[in-house]
Length: 426
Image (cartoon, rainbow, N blue to C red; front, side):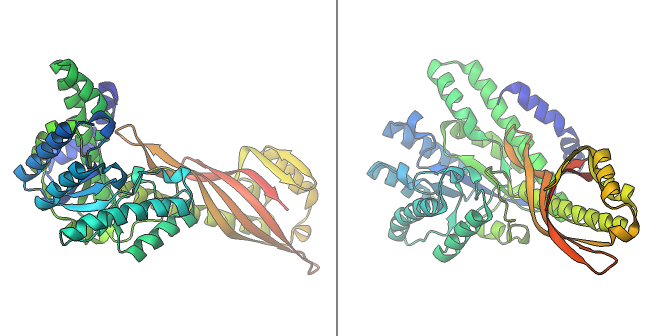
């Protein structure tokens, strides 16, 4: 992310920043989580001495601010006794280690069976270390925050986690801190202190934007101050920037809290079954799920209004839900445009007696879209901009004849309402 993008993001959330500045938030619990142990982006930090120094510096900042973090381990990146010793430092400092899989797979490109096998391999490896310290693996985090691209994938991993005694720790604040690491390292190696200053400013700006926007979103969703879960990575830029970040968070009313306190909050108790090949914060997922529910309720009501219009013989109102350039498909042909759809119905059903009584029963909805760009420039959940719907139509004519069939509708959001853009009836 460059400074221009950060500036744009800050402009987007000016109202949120102003509101927080005028009325400081009450002290709210904030769980700090750290991904990609032993050291994130290990290809940049292959020397044992450097890995040890990064770990030492990160732990020192956490201790200075009295933070008890949950740190997630990619077990396949634990390369030997030196890395095991680094993990032991985290445990000795009072932090909790969680499972972040063995190889950090991308669920969208991995089948459920192979994905679960990788996650279990990560858990089993970490469990051996934890047991030696009298601890157990209680927590998990999805790599890339991706929980499954189909309902079956989402359910498969949730079932596995329940069976294995692991609980997913979601994220509410994500400043994409990992995206600064390579540039930070290059500037540091070159001795370019001006560049390091600029990169550090961008890092802090992105974190602040994410914290303010997500705090405002979470509070608005639940009507109260809700706890937050901050995502960071075990990297070199963090070792240099966490102190300033934690100081700012404390001044803004966040209180560093433990995992059990934060995860006990009801807002985090039942995360939505968000189906998409993208990550995002849990608040964005909740907002997206609510938007999806609202869209489906709206479209269901729209179909009922459409059936009511049919049953009173008002074909103009019945066809008003079609978009101006809608496409209508049937076994007998294709009609393009709302007016053509209307003329087709008028020809086929010239009288109210011919129209009979219609019912429309939704069978299955699927969202389309539902992915947006967050203030930090990343992809995340958003309300759906399109829906596809399978419905059953039933028509009882005046002579008692009963006809029924299926229709596949594609609808797009148009402002605050929805319009049919494609209709395939059979």
